Length: 139
Length: 139
DNA sequence: TTTATAATTTATAATAATTCTAAACTATTT
DNA sequence: AAATAGTTTAGAATTATTATAAATTATAAA
View 1 (cartoon, rainbow over the protein chains, first blue to last red):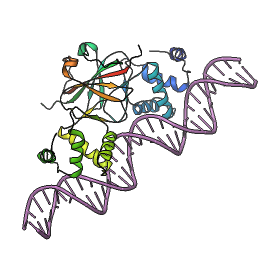
View 2: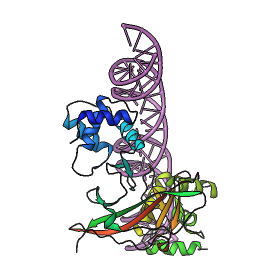
View 3: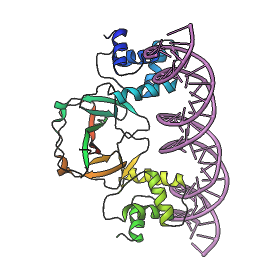
View 4: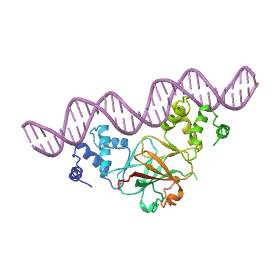
């Protein structure tokens, strides 16, 4: 459980002003036991339900992108029409449950080391992400 | 080099009527030496330039989705606002050049076997895809 | 061959996610 | 307390994609 004061400090340290809206989003995202995967829409709904306060959609976009830039959130590559974000910013991989449209974390140990044997001149590897798509098993 | 006749046969075999538009799209996509990665927009531009004939945007979407369903194209998961497709439907992985917004194939051998050590009850693995993001190397 | 049918194409409208804009507001600095 | 720089906001604009329904075309049947 992170206190409001701690969120305020964290925001200030990142030169993000600790506004009411940003603190609310911090509480929605980071006061959780486990990794949280979400779309912008998910987040808006959570905030609208959780608190009765309204928050502008633009602010949610702004804040999520600001947090991503600061390294507090990671965007997960999925061939979907909406962006998915993850509060787990460590190197790890994902299951994607197609039917449920939900992400599930895979730890490094669940996948094993991945060694890329090819290089492109002038380019360096920024990230290596594995997406494992899951189907219903009608065996 | 695949002939028009061959495309017609292939389409008929998939119970897709060999229309002028579908044949044109086949020629744009499959008459290539190497794998082709594209967005719908790329494909529209190619067809508009290559032939002076107009083709409806809706038809391009319809056809690409039909081809995907038949297994002639694969969608590549990228956290982008537009969908990327690949004419290489074998199991393989990708580099994604962030600056150029271009995909580059990685063969199985470039990545090595990937062994997923976790299972989810009632779900089976449909695909395993590795996306390696590339940055400019300002060394 | 013609006719009937079912599939396909098409322009356009509708939808949905995201970004932009510029005015109002707020946290911080002076 | 005033000045400033950053932030929020509603709504408009943009972009990718999907839906619609009429016109067209490929195929099957007669």
